[in-house]
Amino acid sequence: MHPGDLVFIFRSPAYSSPTAQEGVDALLAAAIFDQKITVIFMGDGVFQLLRNQAPSNGKNQMKMLQSLSMYDIEQIYIQSSALEARALSQADLALPGTCISDDAIHQLMSTAAHVLSF
Image (cartoon, rainbow, N blue to C red; front, side, top):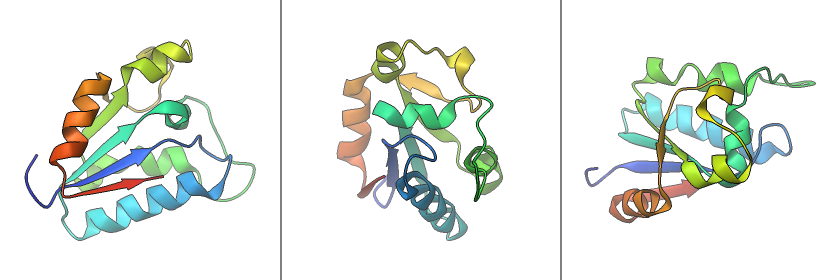
């Protein structure tokens, strides 16, 4: 990563509170301004990536996340230990990403100019 990078960390499940949606909104807003962005789903945030989710009302967060490539957001990481702890695999997820270790996440966060957690 380069100085000036933004790391967005998602720790909240989709639709359980406004936090996850606010994070996606901030992520897309930053992408509009050509920021170099890395996205990490960790802890309960991996639940945001599950297939066949739909809101009872409001925005469909998965559709928004699936549009990340249109915003040139290619660095999408998923905490391996979070998937394992929740008995999930990448086959359960609707959004492709790279599974990484806790140490790799720490490295990404330590080299970022700004870390935003939702």
